[in-house]
Image (cartoon, rainbow, N blue to C red; front, side):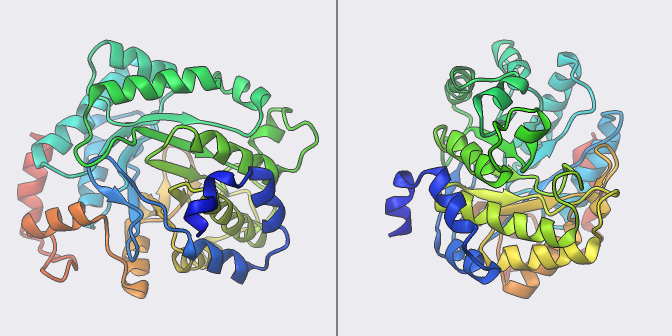
Length: 352
């Protein structure tokens, strides 16, 4: 029933009802919202949780990024996507990273998708040059003025979606868009029109919904204590965002994160991660050591994903799980084999 009515729910409705709900209500209702998407694997199926492998590097060093990808794959992460936040906005550097991801995925035959989280116009330019782009990324917000501050409008997003679809790189689906959002972005751009940040966050989800995305990610704790003061507020906001996104029919994931100047710590993140997993979160981040050395914030690690999978018995995207078994990285029960003997082979295939 929730799936049938999702397209009729406005963001204002979702945000308003979220404010009346306790945490347990946000968790219980979100758990009932089944939302799936697909590109090279199927994301959001019941009993599964995906991980975006985030191998960022402060200098976009190909070897450093490759090492982080190897780390994540060996720990079973990367089924949501392998997604790099580039330090540079130089199209030549972005193109090199796009080709790196395509080379890794193709060489190892991984049923996943790559994404370099650059501005949509840069990605459009690379597509025009024949670059092997899987997902088209863009940060979005809940007002026209805030999106204008990001350098986008709905027409540009539609053009980007059509360009991504034209490449026909998906194998099991054609959801080609990846959006990131975050409470407070419209306020920080002075484009909030005196509307509260939770309502505007839900409005960003309505923007995303129009483009049938593979992934939508709320980076809920990244913006800092100016908007979410402490761990308690970050936890509440994460549950609100997840509930609103799922109610509106989106494959919503959450970057369980905080900045070092917020009144929060990793125990708060453990709590939020556990609550989101109970609520059926679509995907989380996988960052080496949970410490992003390029963006300078604290997120969730490959090992955090292992913890939450073990606690709730959650599997990965089915195609990705099957690949782990075929390659010997996981056993027949889909648990990681932990075989150190595989490391030299995978390292040589990745770095060659």
